[in-house]
Amino acid sequence: MLNLLVGPVTSLVGTWLEGRVEKQKAKTQAEVAKKLAEAKVYEKKAEADINWDIETAKGMQGSWKDEWLTILFSIPLILAFIPGMEGIVERGFNQLNQMPEWYMYSVGTIVAASFGMRGVTKFFGKK
Image (cartoon, rainbow, N blue to C red):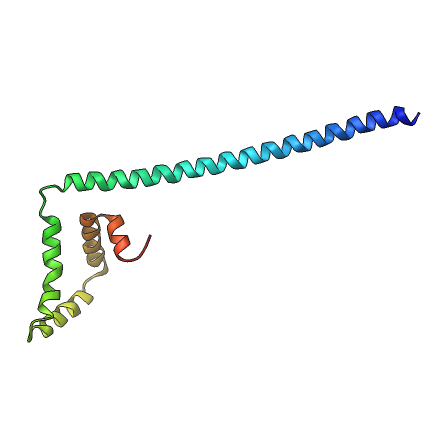
């Protein structure tokens, strides 16, 4: 008589355990699929950033914009080492500190567009 009870109970427990295993497998597969999708999104973003930089570089071939900005930013640097010019450099930077915020952001945007946003963020230590 005990055998008649043990068989169905064992079968019931076995079915329950199989269900739990299948449920855990499905949950694990869903988590893996989510992580793979997130990795794909990051990969596409990195690829888009690189393609943007390549297209920007292609578009600026033959342009003097980078050279102009380099010369412009070098003027105060050079003047700071010429005796008697320190005051001019200091007054210039004091004037820049009084510029409207929108103007300073505009200049920053121009520089970032010229040298590439990734290059500018690397220069300032942000990744």
